[in-house]
Length: 95
Image (tube, rainbow, N blue to C red; front, side, top):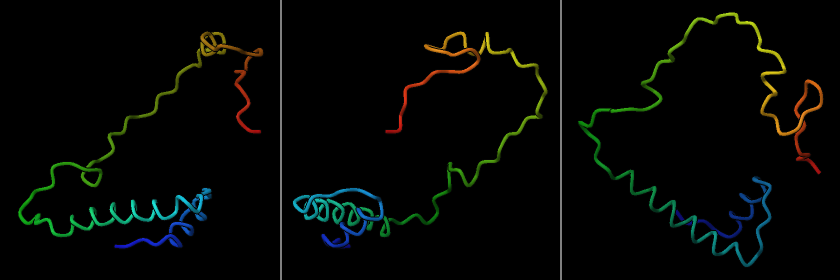
């Protein structure tokens, strides 16, 4: 499957990424190579191969919830680098 520079621009827009015009052609070529490689998987003969693992075969192993007493802030905040009474102080991540 061939990806065009216009499709790269559209994908970048949807992903909210900035892509320079000089990078669009290179990315289109790289994405085309990746999709060509993935297309090869269509030709693999998997007849007679048993499923060996995967999320589709797994069942959740659930346990019963047990009520426990909270250890309190003195224990839960013992290793906090910074704290203000019963709260963690963390660096601001939003500008």
